[in-house]
Image (cartoon, rainbow, N blue to C red; front, side, top):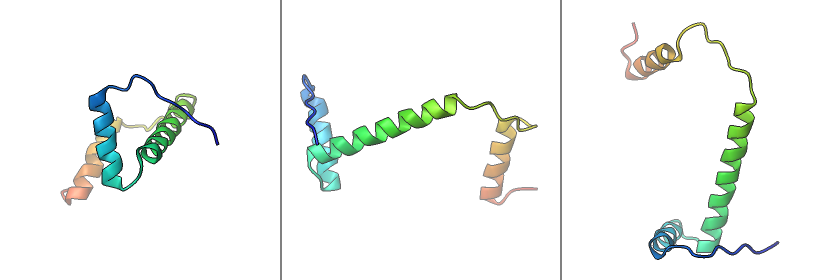
Length: 77
């Protein structure tokens, strides 16, 4: 395992980070490590997504989205 040091963290940001860590019952280091892991996973997922061909749905995506919302609300015709 290695060490990563972050310098020049604004005090207000550090306070926010500490509040989040405390709310989750973990140390600041553990919280930051988890946040970094999520950020990297998200960036890698977006990179893979950008590399995929577009899917042709045959209808506008907005239509499908509205249809799904109507089904959830129970107002589908």
